[in-house]
Image 1 (cartoon, rainbow, N blue to C red):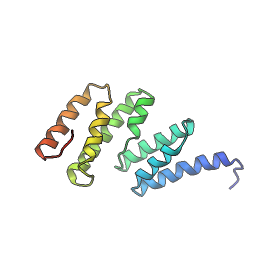
Image 2: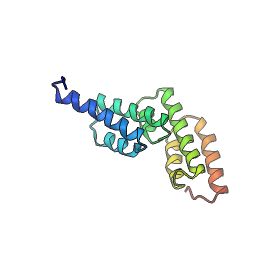
Image 3: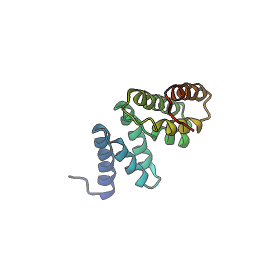
Length: 135
């Protein structure tokens, strides 16, 4: 490798490692990489990579929630909404544990967007109809 700076190598390596985790359906490991980083420009880049690549791969996690809290950009709310609905679809299909619905509802409750009330109502109705405890 021609790059001499260890910092550049490590940042670059960290982003690619996260991308590899996500592409191999191990987004949780990419999320753990983010949690171990100190807050910086690099950690924000990693967070964006996790959010966007995870979304593309159907490996929805909490990255859009954190992005929306750090930056009230409407695109992050849209990503968060899509990720929460995507996880809900995976729960319904049996690809995600039903207990995850509690986490998703909590993420939505931490949002000031008025659309979240309707989404929460739909999810709670499904939970009630399918005897999934969410409280």
